[in-house]
Structures are given as structure tokens and as C-alpha cells.
Image 1: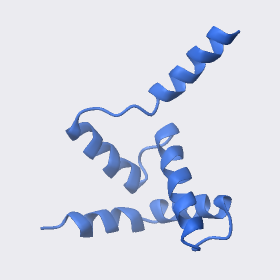
Image 2 (image 1 turned 45 degrees about the horizontal axis):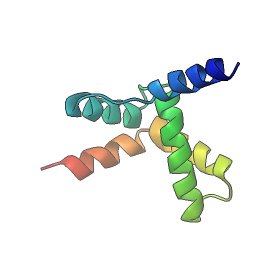
Image 3 (image 1 turned 90 degrees about the horizontal axis):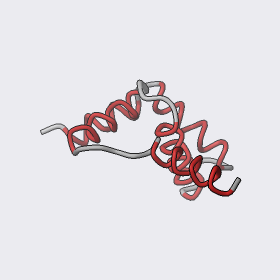
Image 4 (image 1 turned 30 degrees about the vertical axis):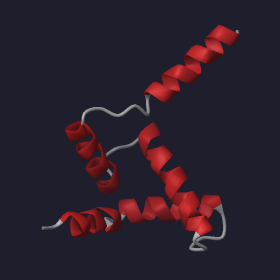
Length: 87
């Protein structure tokens, strides 16, 4: 049972694994434009939700998660990335 749990945890961690710098850049764009779903998006929403909560932009982690999802899904996050990376 313990070995099976370890394998399950390892599989979940592998779901979060990145790749080359080019692959990671594409992943970030896909995460912020809303086309990437699954464990990587969940990790982003968890971290962004916590940051929004700590910054007092939300009243709970759950509200922060929801706000982060809204900012991704409505295009705000992708627009911000574009503005930050414009030459």
C-alpha cells in the first residue's frame, strides 16, 4: 500500500513537470490564455489564489482561486503577459 501511494504521488508530481525553455514558455502562454487545463492550471490557481488572499484582494483562498480563474478565463492574464513581454 505504501509503495502504491508513493507511485501515485510521483505520478501526480510528474503531471506538474515542465520541459525545455521553449515548452515552458508555451505552457505559460497556454495557462494564462486559458487553453491549458488540468493539474498545471490547478497549481497556478492555487498559487495565484494564495497570493490574492495574502494581498487582501480576496477574503479567502477559495475566493482567490475563483478570482484567478476569472482573470485567466476573461483574458486579463493573457493581456497582462502580452503587455509585460512587449518590446
